Length: 199
Image (cartoon, rainbow, N blue to C red; front, top):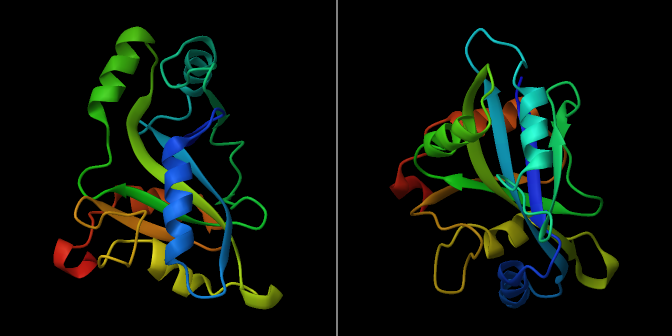
């Protein structure tokens, strides 16, 4: 099992504000987007045959340096394998989109720099993704049509369709309830579908 770091800006996130404004114009009629939040997610996998030896030193590196988090601008949540729970749970009232690069999600350069500055044993791969959380209300107090909302603001499929995922460089996973961390890790590890199937 892997450790997880989630980071987000605690100052104004101009990218999220711009996406919020654009997404409001794309949602199906009668739907209202109340809030949009962006997070970066890092998944730290143990080396093959190793346990969580690296978690203590990694936690110390996160807390004591600016390697992953600038405490003046960002807040974070670091969860070891034993603390993360069985599932990634959306914030209350939200649904989400987990996006990742279409190519390899392993960031070997980041791992090399980390180990050079903060030596630790047992760290295998570092994988990266981006989480978009959306709070949407349906028309007249009814539940939102999440599938229609996802089609409207998820992967770009036309000039007025899609926003948060570029299918030429990214692939994504819709999160409309708790998702097991095993499924999240499998999504980050798996090869992306061919571009012609995603676009």
